[in-house]
Image (cartoon, rainbow, N blue to C red; front, top):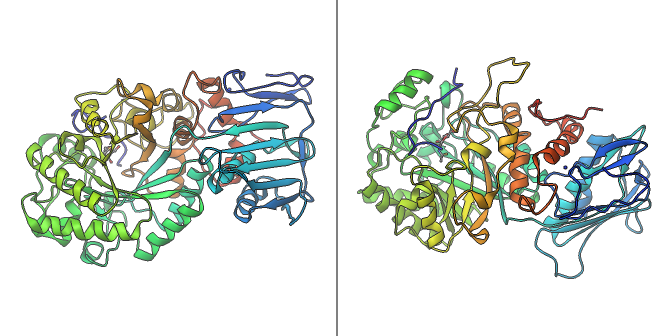
Length: 552
Ligand code: TNX
């Protein structure tokens, strides 16, 4: 039913080598496929995101058996077991002393944060992390390298030195349009972390529901969390649920970035606090969305179950509004160890430009005063006086339209960086192109330049999006997944995988042109070779016909 949405208004929308020869593959000289011939058969090294440097050795591979011993950092040993056992059915032998697989932290703190090295020969596998995150990422890469060779399991002889390009590598999950419970979120954390992503942005509130319990404002979840788009069941995280998510994310080296969207996207606030919200203001375009997707017109005091956006606003000239904002972000700041609090600021279509600027200026300052770094969607860059530490999140198209790049520039002019989420590349809620064996109607929306192929999700370069943007002005890349059509954990898997891997490569790997691995032809082969691992891990990826999936 909620399958397609047209967006017209610009403001609203926007990897061969011979077996006999040692093949050296380094960042600038890798072959297009980072592959090696074994037993006469050519196979890709399915490392995604592409590492900074990978050198394949001539020697025999390391053989993995149930007797293989593993020693080192206990968290890393556990992380490896979580990959090896599902993939091979084997349980490695933990060892305290000499072991064939050694997972260790670098002795000197000279390496880049989150970096790691993997050295594999016939006799040993050594993973060295610059820090615990780097060690975790090294283990993820090792997990990807494990491959079946007849009835044996092997790791090819290889030397990898790897470090991230960007510090911020995120995914966003919208739990407001459809609520997704703690177990689903933990599953998404595992999936994202396996691709070396380190930030989980949770879109916790929207017109359709308020999903986070706050002690200072219990009415929010009591009165505004019961339903979702299409009248589906709602839900919310208790404070304890949120603490669990934050801790689980930390155990996978991810921070949580909570978003409370305002001043628009606040219809649900009005169910609990009618005095601080305006009456819904519906324009013709919203009426069109309502006609197409149902849900009826929004009415004050009634839960909203449709998909229109932009009709709600907090009251800008009422001090009670700012008492509310202070309570909400004050409590959230105390519950959130990560440095960022996201206050939305997108699609405030029923708030005047002047009022929007007043509000954004004040709320960004309030968050900065809490000792946190504010984050806002790029529209908030329309406010010249926005707190100068505010990070902007650009969600326009790969080719910026209608002032989006100018608004994004405000943040950079303040010496604050940008997170890039170009909608026509990394919006994971966009439909995939129709496949040859089209079955059920596709999930997802189409407003961001029509359906988004895996190739389009991959084929972009972060430094080329906003004209004149310096690399240092890019904090990172984030792939949002809006949940209007996304109801279940399987829906999340299908929409995210494999496109999330493209976003991860844009966020972690060397820039296009700086590595021969950074090509669509290399990527699709490397991703295809991950099919067996993903399947074994229970990831219900979309079997896109753009990818040469390997089956075992
Ligand atoms: C735009 S991107 C939105 C969301 C919708 C999404 C659907 C952004 C900041 N706002 O309100 O859920 O499109 O793709």
